[in-house]
Image (cartoon, rainbow, N blue to C red; front, side, top):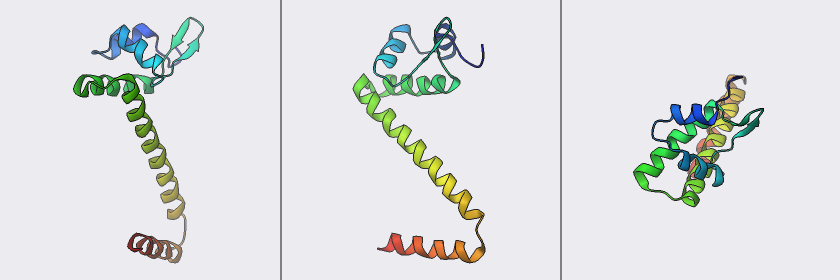
Length: 112
């Protein structure tokens, strides 16, 4: 299976997900399956994403356009988080004086 899941695997893995919902999620471009040798395939990340989409749909009755907006914000947040981790990792590699200077610059930026 190469780590990819078929549509049937996804429907089995995500209990509340229906075939109609899956089609709507793909049409709304909030889930982007890949084309495999036998048709559409999904990554494990897509399964987690669909679990969140089902929860948002069920709890808040979000329409596809609202889902797309929310998921876009979630994606941006994940991107910012990854960038912050990279900055923190780079900062950890610096000497104490540099780290202290950056801390002071951050304090000044927050205050201003």
